[in-house]
Length: 125
Image 1 (cartoon, rainbow, N blue to C red):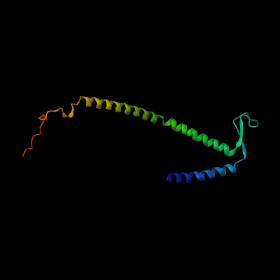
Image 2 (cartoon, one colour):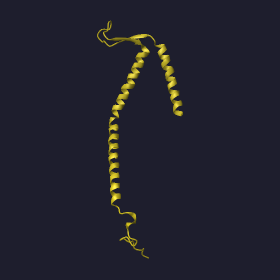
Image 3 (cartoon, helix red, strand yellow):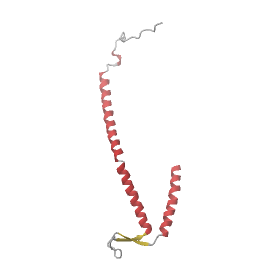
């Protein structure tokens, strides 16, 4: 509940700021991709200023996300590796448990007069 309130407290002012920025910067600008001919560029796009800024912000978020994803590749590989290793060790443990339960004699198979071979001497007085 608190997380939703905090999210609303952050997103509502950001939305208001973005909408007011978009309304204030509706003029069309020309973005040119031709550095040699400024009067008649071969590659140019006319769009509102707020749209250009929005596209640049979205592009930055996408590039940052890709960079973070690639930077965490080592950790994802380690997680997969150790998960696979844990699975193999669990399977080996189950196999050893099954093997040891087959090797143990049944619980009631020892004679009644059986005594262990090792005895603890009484304490010296």
